[in-house]
Length: 132
Image (cartoon, rainbow, N blue to C red; front, top):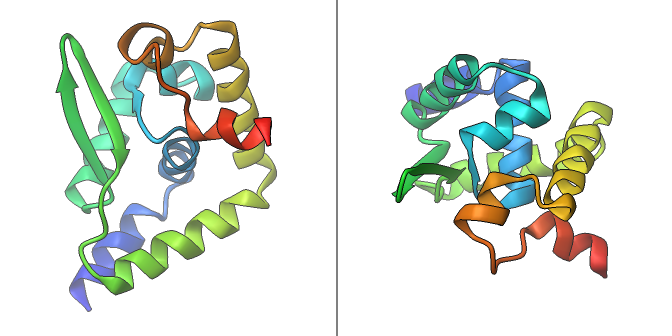
């Protein structure tokens, strides 16, 4: 029960829900891309990512000078169900859709550091979905 409380507490903040939404859509992002899409400072984004990481919802990896963040592999079936439900809820949210569209636009223009500099040959999920 304590692990549920930690996860739900991490998800109780609008900024963290918006970050999770961007990661659902992109697969992986650096802080600077999240900053620009959401209009937050680097400090605010990093603080929220740290909170999500401590709750086991976000993983990070270093690639050169970049720190990339993604949705963590669920620790158990219950966490998978929570993430699936959350992804489904966020698909219908106006703010979440706007953020995803803003991210997709940035990626298409080549402004997204993650997909223009760090991972130039890859296609994020948000663009794959829009191409079908």
